Length: 379
Image 1 (tube, rainbow, N blue to C red):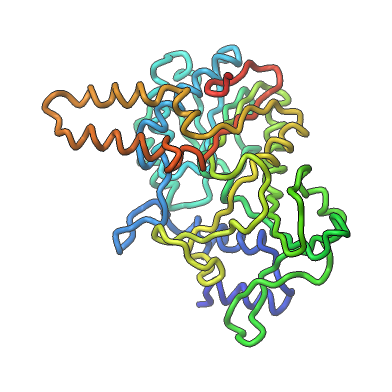
Image 2: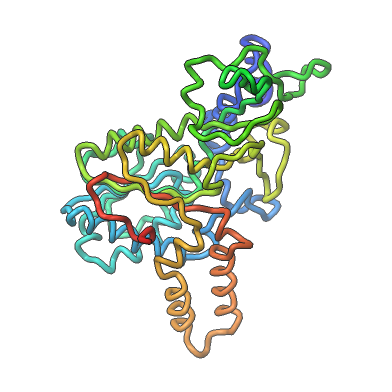
Protein backbone atom coordinates (compact mmCIF):
# COMPACT_ATOMS: atom_id res chain seq x y z
CA UNK A 1 0.00 0.00 0.00
CA UNK A 2 1.28 3.45 -0.92
CA UNK A 3 2.03 5.76 1.97
CA UNK A 4 0.66 9.29 2.01
CA UNK A 5 4.18 10.53 1.25
CA UNK A 6 4.32 8.26 -1.82
CA UNK A 7 1.03 9.69 -3.04
CA UNK A 8 2.17 13.26 -2.50
CA UNK A 9 5.42 12.59 -4.39
CA UNK A 10 3.46 11.06 -7.25
CA UNK A 11 1.09 14.03 -7.34
CA UNK A 12 3.97 16.52 -7.51
CA UNK A 13 5.67 14.51 -10.28
CA UNK A 14 2.46 14.67 -12.28
CA UNK A 15 1.08 18.11 -11.42
CA UNK A 16 4.07 20.10 -10.21
CA UNK A 17 4.86 21.62 -6.78
CA UNK A 18 1.97 22.12 -4.36
CA UNK A 19 1.53 25.08 -2.08
CA UNK A 20 1.71 24.60 1.68
CA UNK A 21 -2.06 24.95 2.12
CA UNK A 22 -2.65 21.97 -0.18
CA UNK A 23 0.12 20.02 1.55
CA UNK A 24 -1.47 20.68 4.96
CA UNK A 25 -4.88 19.58 3.66
CA UNK A 26 -3.44 16.31 2.35
CA UNK A 27 -1.56 15.64 5.58
CA UNK A 28 -4.29 16.59 8.03
CA UNK A 29 -7.52 15.69 6.24
CA UNK A 30 -6.89 12.82 3.81
CA UNK A 31 -9.73 10.42 4.71
CA UNK A 32 -7.58 7.28 4.66
CA UNK A 33 -4.12 8.41 5.74
CA UNK A 34 -4.56 11.96 7.05
CA UNK A 35 -3.57 12.86 10.58
CA UNK A 36 -6.99 13.80 11.96
CA UNK A 37 -9.27 11.19 10.35
CA UNK A 38 -7.06 8.28 11.44
CA UNK A 39 -6.08 8.88 15.07
CA UNK A 40 -6.73 10.40 18.47
CA UNK A 41 -3.85 12.92 18.73
CA UNK A 42 -4.75 13.63 22.35
CA UNK A 43 -4.79 9.98 23.35
CA UNK A 44 -1.99 7.93 24.81
CA UNK A 45 0.31 6.26 22.28
CA UNK A 46 2.08 2.93 22.70
CA UNK A 47 5.08 4.89 23.94
CA UNK A 48 2.90 6.54 26.56
CA UNK A 49 2.74 10.02 25.04
CA UNK A 50 0.16 12.06 23.16
CA UNK A 51 1.27 14.31 20.33
CA UNK A 52 0.17 17.47 22.12
CA UNK A 53 -2.02 18.70 25.00
CA UNK A 54 -4.55 21.52 25.07
CA UNK A 55 -5.77 23.72 27.91
CA UNK A 56 -9.01 21.75 28.50
CA UNK A 57 -6.91 18.61 28.93
CA UNK A 58 -4.70 20.43 31.45
CA UNK A 59 -7.51 21.62 33.72
CA UNK A 60 -11.28 21.32 34.04
CA UNK A 61 -11.32 24.98 35.15
CA UNK A 62 -10.68 26.14 31.59
CA UNK A 63 -13.93 24.74 30.22
CA UNK A 64 -15.88 25.54 33.37
CA UNK A 65 -15.27 29.29 33.20
CA UNK A 66 -15.93 29.26 29.44
CA UNK A 67 -19.34 27.91 30.39
CA UNK A 68 -20.01 31.26 32.08
CA UNK A 69 -19.13 32.99 28.81
CA UNK A 70 -21.70 30.85 27.01
CA UNK A 71 -24.44 31.69 29.51
CA UNK A 72 -23.71 35.41 29.19
CA UNK A 73 -23.77 35.18 25.37
CA UNK A 74 -27.17 33.44 25.48
CA UNK A 75 -28.59 36.06 27.82
CA UNK A 76 -27.29 38.86 25.61
CA UNK A 77 -29.28 37.33 22.74
CA UNK A 78 -32.49 37.68 24.73
CA UNK A 79 -32.52 34.14 26.11
CA UNK A 80 -33.90 32.35 23.03
CA UNK A 81 -35.81 29.14 23.74
CA UNK A 82 -33.45 27.20 21.49
CA UNK A 83 -29.80 27.96 20.85
CA UNK A 84 -27.32 26.04 18.73
CA UNK A 85 -24.01 25.54 20.55
CA UNK A 86 -21.32 24.63 18.00
CA UNK A 87 -17.76 23.59 18.78
CA UNK A 88 -15.03 23.41 16.18
CA UNK A 89 -12.36 20.79 16.81
CA UNK A 90 -13.79 19.46 20.08
CA UNK A 91 -10.95 17.06 20.88
CA UNK A 92 -12.15 14.28 23.15
CA UNK A 93 -15.20 16.29 24.25
CA UNK A 94 -13.58 17.29 27.54
CA UNK A 95 -14.06 21.04 27.12
CA UNK A 96 -17.68 20.62 26.08
CA UNK A 97 -18.31 18.38 29.08
CA UNK A 98 -16.78 20.96 31.42
CA UNK A 99 -18.73 23.82 29.83
CA UNK A 100 -21.98 21.91 30.15
CA UNK A 101 -21.28 21.34 33.85
CA UNK A 102 -21.34 25.10 34.30
CA UNK A 103 -24.28 25.49 31.91
CA UNK A 104 -26.45 23.61 34.39
CA UNK A 105 -26.22 26.65 36.67
CA UNK A 106 -28.75 28.35 34.38
CA UNK A 107 -31.68 25.99 33.90
CA UNK A 108 -33.14 28.04 31.06
CA UNK A 109 -29.89 28.03 29.14
CA UNK A 110 -29.31 24.34 29.68
CA UNK A 111 -32.83 23.51 28.49
CA UNK A 112 -32.33 25.63 25.35
CA UNK A 113 -29.14 23.89 24.21
CA UNK A 114 -28.64 21.85 21.10
CA UNK A 115 -24.97 20.86 20.76
CA UNK A 116 -23.26 20.28 17.41
CA UNK A 117 -19.65 19.13 17.12
CA UNK A 118 -17.66 19.79 13.94
CA UNK A 119 -15.12 16.99 13.79
CA UNK A 120 -13.02 15.35 11.05
CA UNK A 121 -11.60 12.46 13.10
CA UNK A 122 -13.65 9.29 13.41
CA UNK A 123 -11.46 8.25 16.34
CA UNK A 124 -12.13 11.49 18.19
CA UNK A 125 -15.82 11.38 17.35
CA UNK A 126 -16.03 8.07 19.19
CA UNK A 127 -14.24 9.58 22.20
CA UNK A 128 -16.60 12.55 22.17
CA UNK A 129 -19.61 10.26 22.13
CA UNK A 130 -18.27 8.46 25.20
CA UNK A 131 -17.44 11.66 27.07
CA UNK A 132 -20.81 13.28 26.38
CA UNK A 133 -23.00 10.19 26.60
CA UNK A 134 -24.71 11.39 29.77
CA UNK A 135 -24.34 15.14 29.40
CA UNK A 136 -28.09 15.79 29.49
CA UNK A 137 -28.43 17.67 26.18
CA UNK A 138 -28.88 16.66 22.55
CA UNK A 139 -25.51 16.17 20.81
CA UNK A 140 -24.98 15.69 17.09
CA UNK A 141 -22.10 15.91 14.64
CA UNK A 142 -21.74 18.06 11.54
CA UNK A 143 -19.19 18.39 8.76
CA UNK A 144 -19.52 22.18 8.59
CA UNK A 145 -21.40 25.04 10.20
CA UNK A 146 -23.81 25.25 7.27
CA UNK A 147 -25.13 21.80 8.24
CA UNK A 148 -26.19 22.93 11.73
CA UNK A 149 -29.91 23.81 12.09
CA UNK A 150 -30.60 27.52 11.73
CA UNK A 151 -31.36 29.76 14.68
CA UNK A 152 -29.54 31.70 17.41
CA UNK A 153 -26.02 30.27 17.57
CA UNK A 154 -22.98 30.29 19.82
CA UNK A 155 -19.74 29.05 18.25
CA UNK A 156 -16.58 28.15 20.14
CA UNK A 157 -13.21 26.82 19.09
CA UNK A 158 -10.07 26.20 21.13
CA UNK A 159 -6.87 25.57 19.17
CA UNK A 160 -8.81 25.17 15.95
CA UNK A 161 -7.74 28.14 13.85
CA UNK A 162 -4.06 27.18 14.07
CA UNK A 163 -4.86 24.05 12.06
CA UNK A 164 -6.34 25.96 9.11
CA UNK A 165 -4.08 25.55 6.07
CA UNK A 166 -1.73 28.47 5.42
CA UNK A 167 0.18 29.71 2.42
CA UNK A 168 3.71 31.09 2.71
CA UNK A 169 5.04 33.93 0.58
CA UNK A 170 8.62 35.05 0.06
CA UNK A 171 9.42 38.67 -0.85
CA UNK A 172 11.81 38.58 -3.81
CA UNK A 173 11.64 42.25 -4.80
CA UNK A 174 10.18 44.68 -2.27
CA UNK A 175 10.21 47.52 -4.81
CA UNK A 176 7.49 45.72 -6.77
CA UNK A 177 5.08 45.89 -3.83
CA UNK A 178 2.49 43.09 -3.82
CA UNK A 179 3.97 41.89 -7.12
CA UNK A 180 7.21 41.06 -5.34
CA UNK A 181 5.69 38.16 -3.42
CA UNK A 182 6.40 34.62 -4.65
CA UNK A 183 4.80 31.56 -3.11
CA UNK A 184 6.76 28.97 -1.15
CA UNK A 185 5.97 25.48 -2.40
CA UNK A 186 6.49 21.82 -1.52
CA UNK A 187 8.58 20.10 -4.17
CA UNK A 188 10.76 17.04 -4.77
CA UNK A 189 14.46 17.23 -3.91
CA UNK A 190 16.43 17.58 -7.18
CA UNK A 191 18.93 14.91 -6.11
CA UNK A 192 16.62 12.60 -4.15
CA UNK A 193 13.28 11.62 -5.73
CA UNK A 194 12.04 10.25 -2.39
CA UNK A 195 12.53 13.46 -0.41
CA UNK A 196 10.23 16.48 -0.09
CA UNK A 197 11.75 19.97 0.10
CA UNK A 198 10.61 23.58 0.04
CA UNK A 199 11.01 25.64 -3.12
CA UNK A 200 9.90 29.08 -4.28
CA UNK A 201 7.71 29.67 -7.31
CA UNK A 202 9.33 31.54 -10.19
CA UNK A 203 6.04 33.32 -10.92
CA UNK A 204 4.89 36.22 -8.70
CA UNK A 205 1.76 35.86 -6.62
CA UNK A 206 -1.28 36.17 -8.94
CA UNK A 207 -3.21 39.43 -8.62
CA UNK A 208 -6.34 37.53 -7.62
CA UNK A 209 -4.48 36.14 -4.59
CA UNK A 210 -3.06 39.51 -3.60
CA UNK A 211 -6.46 40.29 -2.03
CA UNK A 212 -5.49 37.81 0.71
CA UNK A 213 -2.56 39.98 1.83
CA UNK A 214 -2.94 41.67 5.25
CA UNK A 215 -3.80 45.35 5.35
CA UNK A 216 -0.88 46.20 7.62
CA UNK A 217 2.33 44.38 6.73
CA UNK A 218 5.51 45.27 8.65
CA UNK A 219 8.38 47.00 6.84
CA UNK A 220 9.73 44.55 4.31
CA UNK A 221 13.10 43.52 2.99
CA UNK A 222 13.93 41.00 0.31
CA UNK A 223 13.80 37.42 1.65
CA UNK A 224 11.08 38.12 4.22
CA UNK A 225 8.45 35.40 4.70
CA UNK A 226 4.75 36.14 5.21
CA UNK A 227 2.04 33.63 6.09
CA UNK A 228 -1.56 34.03 4.98
CA UNK A 229 -4.54 31.90 5.93
CA UNK A 230 -7.38 31.86 3.38
CA UNK A 231 -9.44 29.96 5.95
CA UNK A 232 -9.73 33.01 8.22
CA UNK A 233 -11.68 34.90 5.57
CA UNK A 234 -13.80 31.83 4.85
CA UNK A 235 -14.53 31.42 8.56
CA UNK A 236 -15.64 35.02 9.07
CA UNK A 237 -17.77 34.95 5.93
CA UNK A 238 -19.45 31.78 7.18
CA UNK A 239 -20.11 33.33 10.58
CA UNK A 240 -21.42 36.52 8.99
CA UNK A 241 -23.82 34.49 6.88
CA UNK A 242 -24.88 32.50 9.92
CA UNK A 243 -25.44 35.54 12.12
CA UNK A 244 -27.26 37.61 9.48
CA UNK A 245 -30.68 36.01 10.10
CA UNK A 246 -30.34 35.16 13.79
CA UNK A 247 -28.20 36.52 16.63
CA UNK A 248 -24.87 34.81 17.07
CA UNK A 249 -21.58 34.98 18.93
CA UNK A 250 -18.30 33.16 18.39
CA UNK A 251 -15.29 32.74 20.67
CA UNK A 252 -11.91 31.48 19.48
CA UNK A 253 -8.85 30.83 21.61
CA UNK A 254 -5.53 30.10 19.93
CA UNK A 255 -1.86 31.01 19.80
CA UNK A 256 -0.47 33.88 17.78
CA UNK A 257 0.41 37.59 17.81
CA UNK A 258 -1.98 40.53 18.01
CA UNK A 259 -0.30 42.23 15.04
CA UNK A 260 0.84 40.67 11.78
CA UNK A 261 4.38 39.33 12.07
CA UNK A 262 6.82 38.11 9.47
CA UNK A 263 8.58 34.76 9.73
CA UNK A 264 8.02 31.04 9.44
CA UNK A 265 5.71 29.52 12.09
CA UNK A 266 4.75 26.38 10.15
CA UNK A 267 5.52 23.46 12.44
CA UNK A 268 4.91 19.75 12.97
CA UNK A 269 4.38 18.22 16.40
CA UNK A 270 4.76 14.55 17.27
CA UNK A 271 4.86 13.28 20.86
CA UNK A 272 5.25 16.85 22.14
CA UNK A 273 8.36 17.42 20.02
CA UNK A 274 8.86 19.46 16.89
CA UNK A 275 9.71 17.44 13.82
CA UNK A 276 10.45 18.53 10.26
CA UNK A 277 7.04 19.13 8.62
CA UNK A 278 7.94 17.44 5.31
CA UNK A 279 9.43 14.24 6.73
CA UNK A 280 6.36 12.19 7.73
CA UNK A 281 3.19 13.40 5.98
CA UNK A 282 0.11 12.36 7.93
CA UNK A 283 2.09 11.26 11.00
CA UNK A 284 2.38 14.61 12.81
CA UNK A 285 0.11 17.53 13.65
CA UNK A 286 0.70 20.57 11.45
CA UNK A 287 -0.04 24.06 12.76
CA UNK A 288 0.85 27.71 12.30
CA UNK A 289 0.29 30.76 14.46
CA UNK A 290 -2.97 32.67 14.04
CA UNK A 291 -2.75 36.21 12.71
CA UNK A 292 -5.30 37.89 14.98
CA UNK A 293 -4.91 41.23 13.19
CA UNK A 294 -6.04 39.63 9.93
CA UNK A 295 -8.85 37.75 11.68
CA UNK A 296 -10.10 41.04 13.16
CA UNK A 297 -9.81 42.77 9.79
CA UNK A 298 -11.67 40.03 7.94
CA UNK A 299 -14.42 39.87 10.59
CA UNK A 300 -14.91 43.62 10.44
CA UNK A 301 -15.09 43.49 6.64
CA UNK A 302 -17.79 40.83 7.00
CA UNK A 303 -19.90 43.15 9.17
CA UNK A 304 -19.23 41.47 12.50
CA UNK A 305 -18.40 43.15 15.80
CA UNK A 306 -14.93 42.21 17.04
CA UNK A 307 -13.70 42.06 20.65
CA UNK A 308 -10.08 41.36 21.46
CA UNK A 309 -7.72 39.73 20.97
CA UNK A 310 -7.11 39.46 24.69
CA UNK A 311 -4.30 37.42 26.30
CA UNK A 312 -5.66 34.09 27.52
CA UNK A 313 -4.52 34.62 31.09
CA UNK A 314 -6.23 38.00 31.35
CA UNK A 315 -9.37 36.67 29.66
CA UNK A 316 -9.67 33.67 32.00
CA UNK A 317 -9.04 35.92 35.00
CA UNK A 318 -11.92 38.17 33.95
CA UNK A 319 -14.11 35.07 33.81
CA UNK A 320 -13.15 34.30 37.43
CA UNK A 321 -10.79 31.36 37.04
CA UNK A 322 -8.87 32.23 40.23
CA UNK A 323 -12.13 32.15 42.17
CA UNK A 324 -12.92 28.78 40.63
CA UNK A 325 -9.45 27.49 41.61
CA UNK A 326 -10.04 28.47 45.25
CA UNK A 327 -13.49 26.87 45.21
CA UNK A 328 -12.16 23.69 43.65
CA UNK A 329 -9.38 23.48 46.24
CA UNK A 330 -11.84 23.93 49.11
CA UNK A 331 -14.11 21.24 47.69
CA UNK A 332 -11.30 18.72 48.10
CA UNK A 333 -11.85 18.76 51.86
CA UNK A 334 -9.46 18.78 54.77
CA UNK A 335 -8.52 15.14 54.27
CA UNK A 336 -7.44 15.68 50.71
CA UNK A 337 -3.73 15.35 50.11
CA UNK A 338 -1.89 18.66 49.73
CA UNK A 339 -0.62 17.33 46.42
CA UNK A 340 -4.12 17.65 44.96
CA UNK A 341 -4.35 21.35 45.85
CA UNK A 342 -0.83 21.92 44.58
CA UNK A 343 -1.87 20.30 41.30
CA UNK A 344 -4.72 22.79 40.90
CA UNK A 345 -2.27 25.63 41.51
CA UNK A 346 0.08 24.22 38.86
CA UNK A 347 -2.76 23.88 36.37
CA UNK A 348 -3.86 27.47 36.98
CA UNK A 349 -0.29 28.68 36.51
CA UNK A 350 0.15 26.78 33.27
CA UNK A 351 -2.93 28.13 31.51
CA UNK A 352 -2.80 31.72 32.83
CA UNK A 353 0.83 32.67 33.52
CA UNK A 354 2.67 34.88 31.06
CA UNK A 355 5.59 32.43 30.98
CA UNK A 356 3.29 29.55 30.02
CA UNK A 357 0.09 29.85 27.94
CA UNK A 358 -1.21 33.10 29.42
CA UNK A 359 0.17 35.54 26.83
CA UNK A 360 1.08 33.42 23.81
CA UNK A 361 -2.56 32.31 23.56
CA UNK A 362 -5.27 34.88 22.84
CA UNK A 363 -9.05 35.01 22.98
CA UNK A 364 -11.12 36.82 20.38
CA UNK A 365 -14.89 37.17 20.02
CA UNK A 366 -16.84 38.01 16.87
CA UNK A 367 -20.59 38.43 16.97
CA UNK A 368 -23.71 40.05 15.59
CA UNK A 369 -23.22 43.82 15.59
CA UNK A 370 -26.32 44.54 17.68
CA UNK A 371 -25.29 42.48 20.73
CA UNK A 372 -23.77 43.83 23.96
CA UNK A 373 -20.06 43.38 24.61
CA UNK A 374 -19.26 39.75 25.50
CA UNK A 375 -18.08 38.62 28.91
CA UNK A 376 -14.34 38.85 29.47
CA UNK A 377 -13.79 41.65 26.96
CA UNK A 378 -15.33 44.54 28.88
CA UNK A 379 -12.70 47.20 29.41
